[in-house]
Image 1 (cartoon, one colour):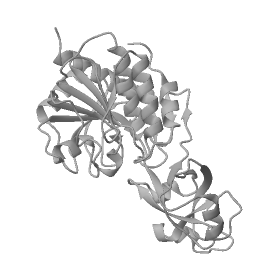
Image 2 (cartoon, rainbow, N blue to C red; image 1 turned 180 degrees about the vertical axis):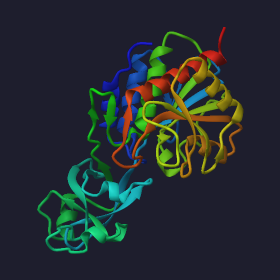
Image 3 (tube, rainbow, N blue to C red; image 1 turned 90 degrees about the horizontal axis):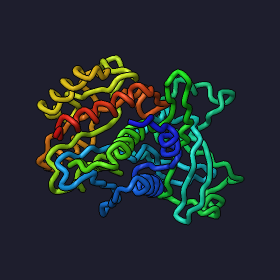
Length: 338
């Protein structure tokens, strides 16, 4: 396989795409796939399906949507209240710069803050539990009232996007918000590049509502019987995974993944010397679990590069991404050898 293009990852990460606002990111992926000679299509709710060959029986999926927020109110002092899109960590988001996207396609900037955030005026600042009722967005505009904000064209329902702060380090680490799951998107974009000149019964699928629970429920080709989901590997005290390996999920909070698929993935990782870890994720759901909950008659597996500090200031490593690419290739070639 040609060398993985991490410029693609950075470009995709820097396109705002919280759940419900994935149009620009989907356009980027559609153009990428078409330049490779593929013929991707979008489902009615905006997911991307791209067949790498006729009558695909295996779908490999990743989600392109990210966390974010939505304007839920305009306060009398000219600040905004907000409602999360997905499981945004409030402690992790505090102090982050944001962009507010309006229905009129205007963009304003601001910062997520605790109410009364100055340590010189709020002696209980450090002990305060962060919640939606005591946090706000400070706009970078001269506004002191709700009317001032309305005059800008900002209203309830506008989309709030967080800066990603992408850094690619010489050590191989990549730091950025939303590696969950644009690192997974890079994996299947690299597969599209590798198999551009081949006809294999595989489709790749980019869902666009995973962070709110229904991304993977529908949209696959009718011929698909197996679904391999690429999503972040969970790291933490309760897990064995790390950033330089591909994590293979045995079970998440919704239940177990397909035993035979996992058995094949582990066998291939061992045979190909691909670094991997098996794990149970205590607080996690995926497009795969959504697909099963929706009643799809599919075998489902879940793998992905280990991502530290999920839903906050995330980090992974090129080795973990490459291990995931390698295991996907090994699984495809094992399934369709000859």
